[in-house]
Length: 359
Image 1: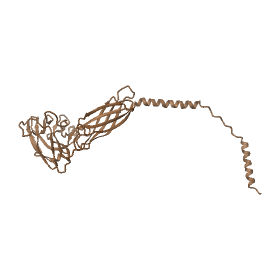
Image 2: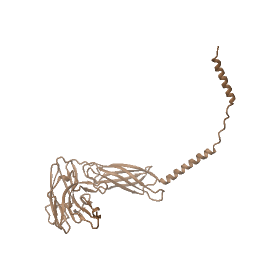
Image 3: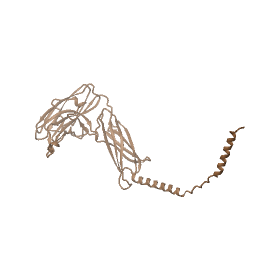
Image 4: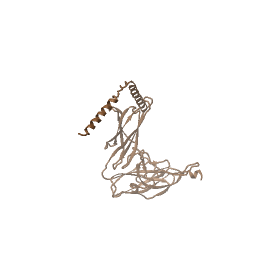
């Protein structure tokens, strides 16, 4: 088998969306990768079939259960050659490690808004330097729960790019326009910080280098609306002295309903000898949540501590040995006269015998 065939790989890159976390201030732009873009179609039809600068950056919708929303999505071919696309709706979720906004791939199963979107066309070819507007309907079920239902309409390029060289790698790329749908009803924001733990590293000998700590924690959105979390970090020593106090700052993510992410905070210059308590406080940009959690750790120079303990153990052993050597010998006790003991015994036997004799 040739190396090209043995190393052939097909990579599916699902929904490479923009990094923005919400509608940006100022002129809105389309989500694009330089070759094509996807965005909400302009109201009232399109005059410039190549423009990607629109009034809407995302689909921001609000409706009640049992209603149907109609709209259009635009796919703009920015290249000089025709492009073929598969168009589909998808559920959104947070990537577990960094909280990035991601959507389901075309082969994955959707359970929410991705199943509510029905496009007039599931595939199309867009001529070069041209934009296509595709109508769609979003039908909200009667059983839909109140709150936010994020998703996207994705344009997947069905043509596979090939790399040069002996290893053939196929890459399928996609770009999506986000959908922020809020189903009318009670809004219940709920955010918690959990699983706090600290990894601490420091030099073996105090003063020979810098120490550092990494604070690991998990954010969980237990409510039904998307949240923009803020985090405050405070650390205190054994006697209550403040070692670190980072005021609340916004985190670079939008935590979607029912999602959780694992994040870290770096602490350079952490203490080298102390018992440290760390407290994390999470709030939101609107201030409707205030939750805390914490953990503690011992900052100990283990090499110096080990040397000290070993020295104390040797010193204790030396004192014990010296004390035993200087202890005076015990006096020797003489044994009683063996003959006297025997005579006494004989007398006793005679006495017992006389008791057992005749009267």
